[in-house]
Amino acid sequence: AKQTGHNHFQFYVASIDKEIRERKQMEKDLAQALANHEFHLVYQPQINLETRRVIGAEALLRWEHPEHGMIPPDLFIPVAEANGSIVEIGQWVLDQACWQAARWASEGTHLRIAVNLSAVQLRQESIVDDILNTLKRHNIPAGRLELEVTETSFMTNLTDAVAKLHRLHRAGISIAVDDFGTGYSSLTYLKQMPVQHLKIDKQFIRDLLINEEDTRIANTIIDLGKSLNLTVVAEGVETAEQEYYLSQRGCALAQGYFFSKPLLPRDFANFVQTFHAR
Ligand code: C2E
Ligand code: CA
Ligand code: CA
Ligand code: CA
Image 1 (tube, rainbow, N blue to C red):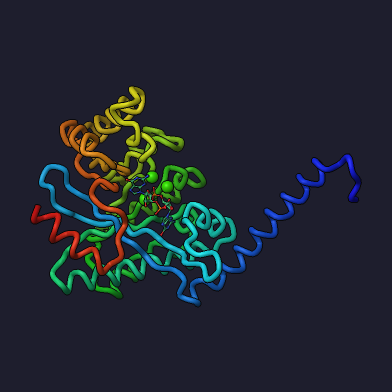
Image 2 (image 1 turned 180 degrees about the vertical axis):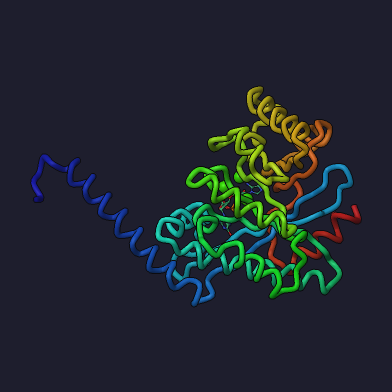
Protein backbone atom coordinates (compact mmCIF):
# COMPACT_ATOMS: atom_id res chain seq x y z
CA ALA A 1 0.00 0.00 0.00
CA LYS A 2 1.84 3.02 -1.25
CA GLN A 3 -0.38 5.97 -0.58
CA THR A 4 0.68 9.52 -0.10
CA GLY A 5 -0.11 10.76 3.34
CA HIS A 6 1.20 7.54 4.86
CA ASN A 7 4.81 8.36 4.31
CA HIS A 8 5.70 8.15 7.92
CA PHE A 9 4.07 4.76 8.24
CA GLN A 10 5.70 3.51 5.07
CA PHE A 11 9.07 4.69 6.23
CA TYR A 12 8.62 2.88 9.49
CA VAL A 13 7.66 -0.39 7.81
CA ALA A 14 10.43 -0.02 5.28
CA SER A 15 13.07 0.48 7.94
CA ILE A 16 11.90 -2.47 10.06
CA ASP A 17 11.90 -4.56 6.92
CA LYS A 18 15.39 -3.38 6.13
CA GLU A 19 16.51 -4.17 9.63
CA ILE A 20 15.14 -7.71 9.38
CA ARG A 21 16.76 -8.23 5.98
CA GLU A 22 20.10 -6.93 7.23
CA ARG A 23 19.95 -9.17 10.25
CA LYS A 24 19.09 -12.20 8.12
CA GLN A 25 21.98 -11.33 5.83
CA MET A 26 24.33 -10.99 8.79
CA GLU A 27 23.23 -14.40 10.05
CA LYS A 28 24.03 -15.89 6.65
CA ASP A 29 27.40 -14.16 6.54
CA LEU A 30 28.19 -15.25 10.08
CA ALA A 31 27.47 -18.86 9.15
CA GLN A 32 30.25 -18.70 6.55
CA ALA A 33 32.69 -16.44 8.36
CA LEU A 34 34.47 -19.22 10.24
CA ALA A 35 35.00 -21.38 7.17
CA ASN A 36 36.13 -18.32 5.20
CA HIS A 37 38.72 -17.41 7.87
CA GLU A 38 37.22 -13.98 8.38
CA PHE A 39 37.79 -14.00 12.16
CA HIS A 40 40.95 -13.20 14.03
CA LEU A 41 41.84 -12.36 17.60
CA VAL A 42 43.56 -9.32 19.02
CA TYR A 43 45.07 -9.26 22.49
CA GLN A 44 44.92 -6.44 25.01
CA PRO A 45 47.64 -6.44 27.69
CA GLN A 46 46.60 -6.62 31.33
CA ILE A 47 48.95 -4.77 33.67
CA ASN A 48 49.70 -5.33 37.33
CA LEU A 49 49.52 -1.77 38.67
CA GLU A 50 51.88 -2.46 41.55
CA THR A 51 54.69 -4.27 39.74
CA ARG A 52 53.99 -2.64 36.35
CA ARG A 53 54.38 -6.00 34.66
CA VAL A 54 52.22 -7.36 31.87
CA ILE A 55 50.58 -10.37 33.49
CA GLY A 56 48.15 -11.40 30.82
CA ALA A 57 46.05 -10.55 27.82
CA GLU A 58 42.38 -10.47 26.99
CA ALA A 59 41.55 -12.09 23.67
CA LEU A 60 39.06 -10.02 21.66
CA LEU A 61 37.33 -11.21 18.52
CA ARG A 62 37.51 -9.32 15.23
CA TRP A 63 35.41 -9.98 12.12
CA GLU A 64 36.80 -8.73 8.83
CA HIS A 65 33.77 -8.88 6.55
CA PRO A 66 34.68 -9.28 2.83
CA GLU A 67 32.38 -6.40 1.79
CA HIS A 68 31.67 -4.36 4.91
CA GLY A 69 35.13 -4.43 6.45
CA MET A 70 35.63 -4.63 10.20
CA ILE A 71 32.39 -5.30 12.07
CA PRO A 72 32.55 -4.51 15.79
CA PRO A 73 31.84 -7.42 18.14
CA ASP A 74 29.15 -5.40 19.92
CA LEU A 75 27.20 -5.63 16.64
CA PHE A 76 27.65 -9.26 15.65
CA ILE A 77 28.03 -11.10 18.99
CA PRO A 78 24.40 -10.46 19.98
CA VAL A 79 23.29 -11.85 16.60
CA ALA A 80 25.56 -14.88 17.02
CA GLU A 81 24.16 -15.39 20.52
CA ALA A 82 20.57 -15.15 19.30
CA ASN A 83 21.00 -17.76 16.57
CA GLY A 84 23.35 -19.99 18.53
CA SER A 85 26.35 -19.65 16.22
CA ILE A 86 28.30 -18.15 19.15
CA VAL A 87 28.79 -21.73 20.35
CA GLU A 88 30.92 -22.65 17.36
CA ILE A 89 32.53 -19.22 17.11
CA GLY A 90 33.30 -19.20 20.84
CA GLN A 91 34.93 -22.61 20.58
CA TRP A 92 37.08 -21.27 17.75
CA VAL A 93 38.07 -18.29 19.93
CA LEU A 94 39.08 -20.57 22.79
CA ASP A 95 41.04 -22.85 20.49
CA GLN A 96 42.80 -19.95 18.80
CA ALA A 97 43.63 -18.22 22.11
CA CYS A 98 45.08 -21.45 23.55
CA TRP A 99 47.10 -22.01 20.39
CA GLN A 100 48.48 -18.48 20.73
CA ALA A 101 49.24 -18.93 24.43
CA ALA A 102 51.16 -22.13 23.65
CA ARG A 103 53.08 -20.33 20.94
CA TRP A 104 54.02 -17.44 23.26
CA ALA A 105 54.99 -19.94 25.95
CA SER A 106 57.32 -21.69 23.50
CA GLU A 107 58.96 -18.30 22.91
CA GLY A 108 59.40 -17.81 26.66
CA THR A 109 56.45 -15.46 27.27
CA HIS A 110 54.11 -17.00 29.81
CA LEU A 111 50.87 -15.07 29.95
CA ARG A 112 47.46 -15.69 31.37
CA ILE A 113 44.93 -15.48 28.59
CA ALA A 114 41.45 -14.15 29.33
CA VAL A 115 38.69 -15.33 27.02
CA ASN A 116 35.13 -14.00 26.96
CA LEU A 117 32.59 -16.76 27.50
CA SER A 118 29.06 -16.03 26.36
CA ALA A 119 26.10 -16.99 28.54
CA VAL A 120 24.91 -19.10 25.59
CA GLN A 121 28.17 -21.08 25.65
CA LEU A 122 27.94 -21.58 29.41
CA ARG A 123 24.49 -23.12 28.94
CA GLN A 124 25.89 -25.84 26.68
CA GLU A 125 25.88 -29.27 28.30
CA SER A 126 29.41 -30.09 27.13
CA ILE A 127 31.03 -26.70 27.77
CA VAL A 128 33.22 -27.76 30.72
CA ASP A 129 34.59 -30.79 28.88
CA ASP A 130 35.05 -28.73 25.71
CA ILE A 131 37.14 -26.16 27.58
CA LEU A 132 39.23 -28.73 29.46
CA ASN A 133 39.85 -30.70 26.27
CA THR A 134 40.96 -27.55 24.45
CA LEU A 135 43.50 -26.82 27.19
CA LYS A 136 44.79 -30.38 27.01
CA ARG A 137 45.04 -30.30 23.23
CA HIS A 138 47.30 -27.26 23.40
CA ASN A 139 49.11 -28.37 26.54
CA ILE A 140 48.11 -25.21 28.40
CA PRO A 141 48.01 -25.40 32.21
CA ALA A 142 44.52 -24.53 33.45
CA GLY A 143 46.00 -21.75 35.59
CA ARG A 144 46.88 -19.89 32.40
CA LEU A 145 43.26 -19.53 31.38
CA GLU A 146 40.78 -17.01 32.68
CA LEU A 147 37.15 -17.00 31.60
CA GLU A 148 35.25 -13.72 31.59
CA VAL A 149 31.55 -14.14 32.21
CA THR A 150 28.91 -11.48 32.70
CA GLU A 151 26.39 -11.36 35.47
CA THR A 152 23.60 -12.24 33.04
CA SER A 153 25.26 -15.66 32.60
CA PHE A 154 24.17 -16.49 36.13
CA MET A 155 20.59 -15.42 35.59
CA THR A 156 19.04 -18.10 33.40
CA ASN A 157 19.94 -21.11 35.48
CA LEU A 158 21.90 -20.21 38.57
CA THR A 159 22.38 -23.77 39.87
CA ASP A 160 23.63 -25.00 36.50
CA ALA A 161 26.00 -22.04 36.07
CA VAL A 162 27.37 -22.45 39.60
CA ALA A 163 28.00 -26.16 39.07
CA LYS A 164 29.83 -25.60 35.79
CA LEU A 165 31.94 -22.72 37.06
CA HIS A 166 32.87 -24.80 40.11
CA ARG A 167 34.08 -27.61 37.86
CA LEU A 168 36.14 -25.16 35.81
CA HIS A 169 37.54 -23.55 38.93
CA ARG A 170 38.42 -26.89 40.51
CA ALA A 171 40.35 -27.69 37.35
CA GLY A 172 42.43 -24.54 37.96
CA ILE A 173 40.79 -22.04 35.61
CA SER A 174 40.09 -18.58 37.02
CA ILE A 175 36.77 -16.85 36.56
CA ALA A 176 36.24 -13.10 36.16
CA VAL A 177 32.95 -11.24 36.34
CA ASP A 178 33.00 -8.95 33.30
CA ASP A 179 31.22 -5.58 33.13
CA PHE A 180 30.76 -5.72 36.88
CA GLY A 181 28.19 -3.22 38.10
CA THR A 182 26.29 -2.89 34.83
CA GLY A 183 24.08 -5.97 35.13
CA TYR A 184 21.99 -7.40 37.87
CA SER A 185 24.78 -7.41 40.38
CA SER A 186 23.89 -9.38 43.39
CA LEU A 187 26.07 -10.10 46.35
CA THR A 188 24.33 -13.46 46.60
CA TYR A 189 25.76 -14.48 43.23
CA LEU A 190 29.20 -13.33 44.23
CA LYS A 191 29.05 -15.43 47.37
CA GLN A 192 27.91 -18.54 45.53
CA MET A 193 30.09 -18.19 42.49
CA PRO A 194 33.63 -19.47 42.36
CA VAL A 195 34.79 -16.08 41.14
CA GLN A 196 38.31 -14.67 41.61
CA HIS A 197 38.24 -11.47 39.58
CA LEU A 198 35.92 -8.49 39.23
CA LYS A 199 36.24 -6.31 36.14
CA ILE A 200 35.10 -2.73 36.67
CA ASP A 201 33.27 -1.80 33.50
CA LYS A 202 34.85 0.91 31.40
CA GLN A 203 31.73 3.08 31.69
CA PHE A 204 32.72 3.75 35.32
CA ILE A 205 36.37 4.40 34.45
CA ARG A 206 35.74 6.82 31.59
CA ASP A 207 34.74 9.72 33.85
CA LEU A 208 36.68 8.61 36.87
CA LEU A 209 37.76 11.70 38.88
CA ILE A 210 35.40 13.83 36.77
CA ASN A 211 32.10 12.30 37.75
CA GLU A 212 31.75 11.87 41.47
CA GLU A 213 29.24 9.04 41.19
CA ASP A 214 31.46 7.00 38.88
CA THR A 215 34.38 7.53 41.23
CA ARG A 216 32.30 6.29 44.14
CA ILE A 217 31.15 3.24 42.20
CA ALA A 218 34.73 2.37 41.25
CA ASN A 219 35.79 2.82 44.89
CA THR A 220 32.97 0.59 46.05
CA ILE A 221 33.91 -2.19 43.64
CA ILE A 222 37.57 -1.98 44.71
CA ASP A 223 36.56 -2.17 48.38
CA LEU A 224 34.15 -5.02 47.69
CA GLY A 225 36.94 -6.91 45.95
CA LYS A 226 39.22 -6.37 48.94
CA SER A 227 36.68 -7.55 51.48
CA LEU A 228 35.72 -10.62 49.43
CA ASN A 229 39.35 -11.31 48.52
CA LEU A 230 38.79 -10.86 44.79
CA THR A 231 41.26 -9.32 42.38
CA VAL A 232 39.85 -6.18 40.82
CA VAL A 233 40.61 -5.32 37.20
CA ALA A 234 39.83 -1.88 35.77
CA GLU A 235 39.08 -1.82 32.05
CA GLY A 236 39.09 1.18 29.75
CA VAL A 237 41.96 3.00 31.49
CA GLU A 238 42.87 5.82 29.10
CA THR A 239 44.77 8.40 31.13
CA ALA A 240 47.73 8.64 33.51
CA GLU A 241 45.41 10.23 36.08
CA GLN A 242 43.10 7.22 36.01
CA GLU A 243 46.01 4.84 36.29
CA TYR A 244 47.51 6.77 39.21
CA TYR A 245 44.21 6.98 41.06
CA LEU A 246 43.41 3.28 40.59
CA SER A 247 46.83 2.12 41.69
CA GLN A 248 46.75 4.39 44.77
CA ARG A 249 43.26 3.15 45.57
CA GLY A 250 44.51 -0.46 45.52
CA CYS A 251 43.06 -1.73 42.25
CA ALA A 252 45.31 -4.65 41.33
CA LEU A 253 45.10 -4.87 37.54
CA ALA A 254 44.23 -2.63 34.63
CA GLN A 255 43.84 -2.64 30.90
CA GLY A 256 43.07 0.16 28.47
CA TYR A 257 44.33 2.39 25.70
CA PHE A 258 46.61 4.18 28.17
CA PHE A 259 48.77 1.05 28.14
CA SER A 260 47.83 -0.40 24.79
CA LYS A 261 45.03 -1.03 22.33
CA PRO A 262 44.25 -4.67 21.62
CA LEU A 263 47.19 -5.89 19.53
CA LEU A 264 47.86 -8.38 16.79
CA PRO A 265 49.88 -11.32 18.13
CA ARG A 266 53.02 -10.26 16.27
CA ASP A 267 52.99 -6.86 17.99
CA PHE A 268 52.31 -8.22 21.44
CA ALA A 269 55.76 -9.55 22.31
CA ASN A 270 57.29 -6.21 21.25
CA PHE A 271 54.89 -4.34 23.46
CA VAL A 272 55.77 -6.47 26.48
CA GLN A 273 59.51 -5.91 25.95
CA THR A 274 59.15 -2.16 25.49
CA PHE A 275 56.75 -1.80 28.41
CA HIS A 276 59.00 -3.68 30.79
CA ALA A 277 62.03 -1.69 29.67
CA ARG A 278 60.50 1.72 30.29
P1 C2E B 1 34.38 -6.41 26.85
O1 C2E B 1 34.63 -7.85 27.13
O2 C2E B 1 33.89 -5.58 27.98
O3 C2E B 1 35.75 -5.86 26.26
C1 C2E B 1 36.24 -4.57 26.49
C2 C2E B 1 36.04 -3.68 25.29
O4 C2E B 1 36.62 -2.40 25.57
C3 C2E B 1 36.74 -4.16 24.02
O5 C2E B 1 35.92 -3.77 22.93
C4 C2E B 1 38.04 -3.36 24.04
O6 C2E B 1 38.63 -3.24 22.76
C5 C2E B 1 37.53 -2.05 24.56
N1 C2E B 1 38.57 -1.23 25.18
C6 C2E B 1 39.74 -1.64 25.72
N2 C2E B 1 40.42 -0.62 26.25
C7 C2E B 1 39.68 0.49 26.05
C8 C2E B 1 39.85 1.88 26.39
O7 C2E B 1 40.83 2.31 26.99
N3 C2E B 1 38.84 2.72 26.03
C9 C2E B 1 37.72 2.29 25.39
N4 C2E B 1 36.79 3.18 25.08
N5 C2E B 1 37.53 0.98 25.05
C10 C2E B 1 38.49 0.10 25.39
P2 C2E B 1 35.67 -4.74 21.69
O8 C2E B 1 36.94 -5.47 21.38
O9 C2E B 1 35.03 -3.92 20.64
O10 C2E B 1 34.65 -5.79 22.27
C11 C2E B 1 33.36 -5.40 22.64
C12 C2E B 1 32.64 -6.51 23.37
O11 C2E B 1 32.41 -7.61 22.49
C13 C2E B 1 33.44 -7.09 24.53
O12 C2E B 1 33.32 -6.25 25.65
C14 C2E B 1 32.76 -8.42 24.70
O13 C2E B 1 31.57 -8.28 25.42
C15 C2E B 1 32.43 -8.78 23.26
N6 C2E B 1 33.46 -9.71 22.75
C16 C2E B 1 34.63 -9.46 22.15
N7 C2E B 1 35.27 -10.60 21.82
C17 C2E B 1 34.47 -11.62 22.24
C18 C2E B 1 34.57 -13.06 22.20
O14 C2E B 1 35.55 -13.66 21.74
N8 C2E B 1 33.50 -13.76 22.72
C19 C2E B 1 32.42 -13.14 23.27
N9 C2E B 1 31.42 -13.89 23.76
N10 C2E B 1 32.31 -11.80 23.33
C20 C2E B 1 33.32 -11.05 22.83
CA1 CA C 1 35.73 -8.98 28.55
CA1 CA D 1 33.26 -4.29 29.78
CA1 CA E 1 30.87 -6.51 27.45
